[in-house]
Image 1 (spheres, rainbow, N blue to C red):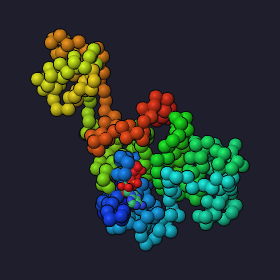
Image 2 (cartoon, rainbow, N blue to C red):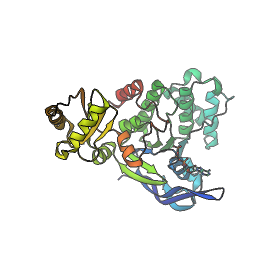
Image 3 (tube, rainbow, N blue to C red):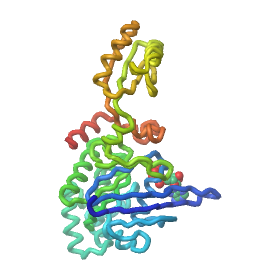
Image 4 (cartoon, rainbow, N blue to C red):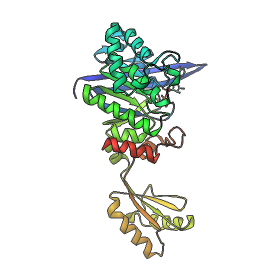
Length: 343
Ligand SMILES: Nc1ncnc2c1ncn2[C@@H]1O[C@H](COP(=O)(O)OP(=O)(O)OP(=O)(O)O)[C@@H](O)[C@H]1O
């Protein structure tokens, strides 16, 4: 691994909530190399934001240690802050300030001289396509413009490591695609390390080189998106029938013959069944033929590759879509736009 941007060992954070102790982060071990793009996933309350706040020195850890951009988060928080950018879930810009002034003020806050801050602000306005609204007040911006302003503010001091907490939540598909174009360009041009939480699994799948999944304050998986899908899920065949009763008969038939595709994990959903297999393209015709021999007519059949949503479900027992926070994860327009960028 190249030089480390993040090196955390046994990081913990416990909150007192009334008489209860909430163990939000329970022994986070994490190494991120310079230039990596890491997506940090997990259900609501898993401890992702708290982890980010520890690594960005916004919260003091209860235990453990972390070196971020070469500096200790406990003993050198100012040095850490000067090297990182943090874009949190809540916008921090003042509503009545003008966009350009807001970025300059942020630069000044980080200790940049006035003319350097202005120069950087202008470059960021151009890069993030915000020039047209540079003199407008923040409150007049659209959601996408507002998010890009947040990014500009997180970048004005030229950080080598950027933390993004759900950068695309609430953005329309077009703005989401624009934001990703920018993040990717940033990495290409400056080699910026990006560590981000997201509830959009399609984004993590398309762009992250590494995916960490956290649940109950612990990292429970750490691999490339392809590695996670291959190891944890594999292929499956999805079959549709005329009725739930027919699907149930097919399920019984397949379960009676584990070798024919009815092994553990085969399940029915309404008038459909899902059969986990090693190679979907090879198994599909065999399964359809086996069912046809028992006079069970398959109406639709699909060979499916695993998705990160499947991985997430396997690891956490929850689907992000079910929790209502990423209901448009499968938004066709959004996925199409992201797919075009990834390609
Ligand atoms: N200031 C706080 N005081 C008490 N408990 C807190 C505090 N901040 C977070 N928690 C608790 O810590 C746990 C982890 O919260 P955290 O916000 O880190 O999760 P998350 O994975 O970022 O969730 P989300 O996806 O909803 O943003 C939750 O149980 C949360 O209620």
